[in-house]
Image (cartoon, rainbow, N blue to C red; front, side, top):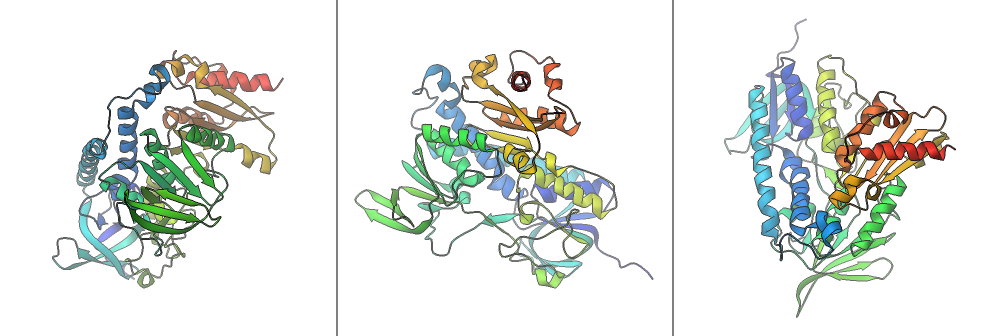
Length: 469
């Protein structure tokens, strides 16, 4: 019996980190690949409205505010007085344009076809694409399909969003003026990142969340440190509080927002950022035609190989939920493409690092204290404060902390948790040691360049050994 003939070996819906990596991996295996992207530009949310713009915005904030140098030159130090949103957007637009060009060139170089338009399944192996150039529809069939459509910001229909006074995270890039006050509703990764950025610019920020702690998947000592530094930077934390209403307010002071909490408290703020999670961008895919269903938030359930209920249809990236990071999405895309074409590859999800670009920055890899305590694993910790390290003093970062967690008996490294300058770079040293089954003795016996922040590993290792008695 002859095999059915398809236009492509792999069709990828979405050109964000997950989709792009899946497409390029399949192309490098000699497969015929097409990427369908709804937007006129490639890169998805990550490049156009999410990861790249927000991290570039953060870098502009850090530079123009003089935040990095304040530990040396004082709290009043700044590179530019009266920072505007135009100042911040200038750098962001430059980086986004460059990244889009790089991504498009990578797809072209690997001979991946690119079709701009909105995809919808017509059957489990075929998608109909409504072309973005308004030249009608195009039918595409493929033996394997990867869904990498990402997510959109969740919107409460009871909240009067207008894009300037009451916003979602995508609206930040279109914000005309820097507000004097901002209330962020939702203390997830996106909400906390933007809260700390605006506070660094001198905006009076209030952060509201119904959970009683920040980022519960991160080691508690690190998040407690973050909460302390946020409050030190004049951010008001309203944890354990639920929002009842969000109402526009116009008076002699102009347009503002009144937020009423379930506890009866009221917050009057110039602008409000609503950041209560993300919803899978699957609404237009006509998934019933493919025999695939979503959960209540539009996300897709997959197995260990990223297959949906239809074995030839894969889903990767933010559309499958936690951890919803660009780095993990890329690896999911690569692994899905390898599995689709019977290439043996392996990765260890337990060694995926998390990078959270708050101010100060956070990054972790491996297990945290809460997880080890619940599992009954005997462990010890070792810590190094940036203020004890020459490089920390040179950089002016006196709040940073690197924490190692290791097995008390075997001394095997189990987790690395960092808050401070360069955390998302520094964490990879620990990631490599964990991946190769190393112990904290590696750091004791290794010579690090001096002065560097990497020296924190040696200091923390000595601290941990001393705790063993």
